[in-house]
Length: 189
Image 1 (cartoon, rainbow, N blue to C red):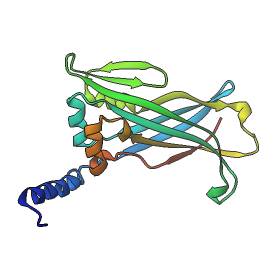
Image 2 (image 1 turned 30 degrees about the vertical axis):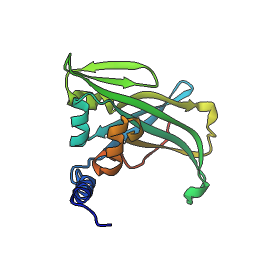
Image 3 (image 1 turned 90 degrees about the vertical axis):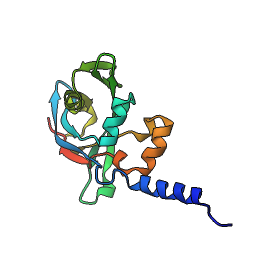
Image 4 (image 1 turned 90 degrees about the horizontal axis):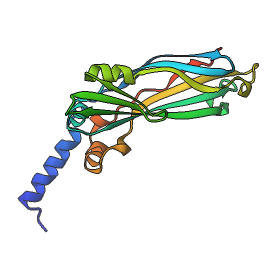
């Protein structure tokens, strides 16, 4: 069976779609993170720089809600070999970013707490999205005072939360794979 011209055109379009956005792929950067002990609870403060790709910004303006995940792990260090480390706590903080065309405002929702903020610009919304303040991690009694602990953080766009038609495109477009590297800071009082 010979491939017809229509099938070849579709194949070329599919191959081209795989490479669209390769240059535009952005990354998220965790710029700073620190912990502190207040009362009997350890808290986390962090700053994440979310750099959205052009495709993500365009989807946002067309009414597509974007979901971001901040993965947090508290790890007890047990030596030089990372395989010996033990997770003593973990959480995932979820945030959504949505554009409201009627009011021309952006909404940032911290899904875990239900806190919603309406903001006038995308840059302000992204800045607010990246500020993590006074997030409870764990109780002081859960920590062995003689052991060493670190907190690991990773931010990423949750592709699985996108609507199905966009999700299918996102699987093949590198510009949708936005995440940070793991950021490590000591768990300190």
